[in-house]
Structures are given as structure tokens and as C-alpha cells.
View (cartoon, helix red, strand yellow):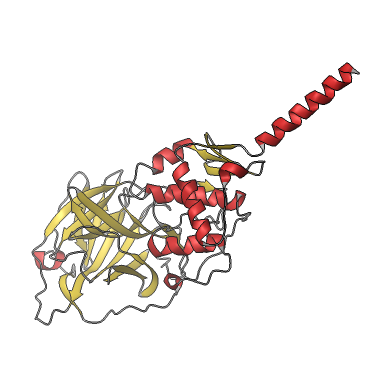
Length: 389
């Protein structure tokens, strides 16, 4: 009888121990601010959580297969975050938002019982920050999780029936009238007034005129920006456009336009680019990765693209081959006047009709040729976000 009593007591102790484990709260201090924020955002939408009472585990791990995070449906919910990825994204501007996105995605699984939702908005953005799992047509899981988009993605996280946001409207609605050229290069001849650049053949590149286009041949193993500096402030309303044809052996290499500030202590260069897989990217040189990958139908298969950016009321509207495809809030905090193009490693590109225009001030404008030329900035090819599960 005593032996039986001991067995029953042991079973009860194990059961009690298991019950206690079901409400364990163990969240690494690095994740605490994001759990607190999740709780606050949930409360604004009628969800009330007390994880210290109900239990939650979020811990670092060394995840395999390029995973960023993983949710285990245990009692309590246990979430693993890849330590190397967490550290890497935190070293770049905007890293806090990437970390928030990752924690909220995994808590969306474990706390809100959300599955992956791999649908697109009309403009090509993912419909939900709950996108993930098996790739859809090889498209990355990068989400432009900032400003008005963050507001939408948070609302959709807690309410799957959230209406389509204004930024996803595929119809262009900004004012593009009243712009006049302040800088234009036609590349019709080798004269400075047409070509802008001096024709050079140096270690890193060769510049020439070929069939009334500027031919730029890279000899470098690194991608880089080539910048000009017209008297146009990137904080004003402007139009920047450029015809570009790129020949590269790398199907993933990006070519496109770049604009922003390249001043020491105030560097912030935006890029709008295309690769041979017919993917379009937008990002900032300072960020860990590009913001978003788009798959518009009007990417030219020939490799010759017309890029255009209209900055209007602190928002960038992007056009590819004369079709509006995307918009996002402007990210520059300071003045700058850098405009140029992105050259992949070892690629040859041809340029035509480089134009920078600003809103007509009511005074006659003279198209400027007096700009600083041949400014080169090394560009590190941006990585995809990790796989999201």
C-alpha cells in the first residue's frame, strides 16, 4: 500500500509540475519591448492578453534552412528567433521595425491563431504580414513595414477583413503637372553639353558614346552607384527619369536609378531597380535589405527600361516604362542633391535622356549642365529577408 501511495504521489507531483509549465513566462529581455507593444496594439483592438499569467516563451535559437523565426504550438506557446538574423537586422536603420515585424508574425501564429496568408494587394505589396512558408513564384517575403503601411499591416493582423488601403490603389492620383527641366543630358555627342561625363577608360570603368547613348562599361566586381549633383534638393517636388538598358550575366543583379543625399553624416540613397528575373525593387542603401520586391507585368524583356520617380508632397511615385507601379513615403531627413544610376558588377549599360525637373516657380528656367560628375559610391547587393514561418 505504501508503495502504491508513493507511485500516486509521484504521478500527482509530475502532473502538478506539468500544469505549472503550461503557464511558464520566459521571454528574453531583447524581446520584451515587442511583446509589450503587441499587447498594447491588441488592447486597442479589443484583445486583452496577460502573458505573465497565461504563459509565453520567446527564446533565441540557431535555426536551420535560413529561417528567421519559428512558432511551436506547445503549452505555453514557444517561439524561437534566429540569433544571427536578429543581431544582423538590428545593426541597420529601420532594424527595430524588422524585429517588430518578425515577433508580431510569430505571435500572430501562436497567439492569434493566424495561418500564412500569401495574397497580394493590387499594387504588388503582400496583403498581410502573415505571408510566409513556401515561396510563391520565388517572390521574397520582404514587406514595406513602415509609415502608413505599418498602420495597415497592424490592423490587418488583428482583423483579416480590413479594407484595402489607399496606398494599394493601382491608379495614379498625384499632380504631375507644372514641372520644368533643370538638368537634361541627351548623350547625342561627346560634348560636355550633351554627354555630361568626360569620356574615360580607367581601371574601374569605361565611358563612351554609342549610337547617341552613353555607354558605361563596368570593370568592377562590385556594384556601384554613379551620381551627378544638379542644383535640385531631394526634399523638393521633383521628377527624375532615365532610359536604361543593362547587359549582365547575373540574372539577380539589379540596375536602375538612385537619388537622395550622399553627404557625409547625412547619407541616404534611395534606389529603384530591376533584374533579369523581371523583379522590381525599391530600397535605401542604408537598410538591411530592399523594402519590397514587385512583379509588374510591364517589365521590358529586352532589358531596356524607362525609370521615372515623381516626388510629390513627400511621397515617391514610381513609374516603369511609362506605367505607374508603386508609391511610398519619402524617407530622407536632410537635404541632398544626388541623382544617378546603379551599375551591376561587370555589366554594360546604355543610358539616354537623363532628366531632372522641378515645379515651375513662375520664373523662366535654364537647363543646367554645370554639375559635379563622376561620383562613385559602392553598393552592396541587398539580401532577401530570411524565410518566415
